[in-house]
Length: 118
Image 1 (cartoon, rainbow, N blue to C red):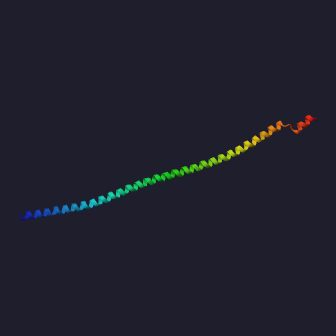
Image 2: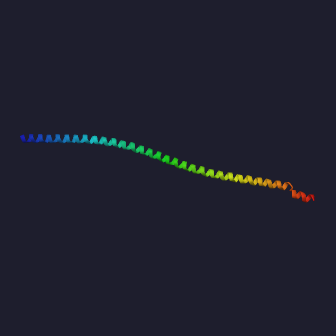
């Protein structure tokens, strides 16, 4: 019977040690799990911030491209305006020349006058 009691005490002691070991492992696992959960939440926060920064970066890139294209269009319009001014000046010059030619046809020249006079 002493053998049985000794064996029972040893078995209970081993079960107690195993239970304590399992409890310690669960406590350590729980702490690590909580740490991983916190790190995962921080990772999600960082991911969201990165996505926002990427969106903002893409928006700023789009804005820069639009600005650049706008400046190109403004430059093209300035060139067209300069060409239009030249064309208008040339047109006015042609109009004045045409008016001058029409006036010359309407007014008899001095040569015509002297030919008819003599």
